[in-house]
Length: 316
Image (cartoon, rainbow, N blue to C red; front, side):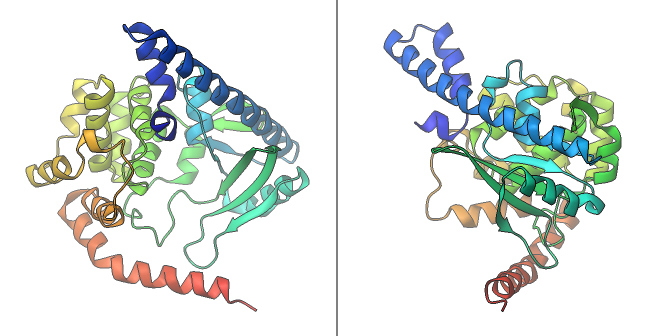
């Protein structure tokens, strides 16, 4: 189902239940939503076990994105299904955190190598048909990423985070919005669930803290685009102070409107999807200088990624 792939099944079910929709369809949506909620519960239990194991080793950890949004932002955890589990640790505790995951029965998945490495993947089957993929981060944005102009200090994020579960902390709403903006650009403004997150996060954010955080992290353009889409698609309410601070230059607004048509965002990407994603990553940078720096760095970034991948693949 397209709604499930776009991670908006809960939103669709809520709207269908309150509208004059056929009852068979409402029941079908409820059944699918319950199946996703069950998977969420299993992943959440495993996540809390990871947090407890990290706490026993004295390792600080911030849960990002899906798990944080489900348990710290949305009104009910089942409203926000999540796939991967994103955890941020300090670089000095990376190796110790990896050992904890291995001791819990996780197996190494994709391992980034080279200068651009910022995360490692660990996998564990919770059911024959359900695998928990833990992405262990020690940087928020890699030095070779095309969104590296967007900056969020990991140490500052840790300092502003708050305890949520044993061994697990949650980022502040303002930091979470910045992360959501970076993530939205990184994934080509898909799926729709990534846009829905903006509606829920902006409810909790302090406007003045957010404006300051956005300025320092260079994410004004990305956040402006994300919130505009959340307003158009999901009826998000953006405080006037935030909306005024995020007004973009005319050339950038026109470019976003042409590339980000709400009616097209739920559909699978066509053959030109990769080209559009790269173009959006360039256009989502703050200011003309950020756009130029990102555009001119693309050949070097792609070449260095290829070199790192080749070195990893053919290492003896």
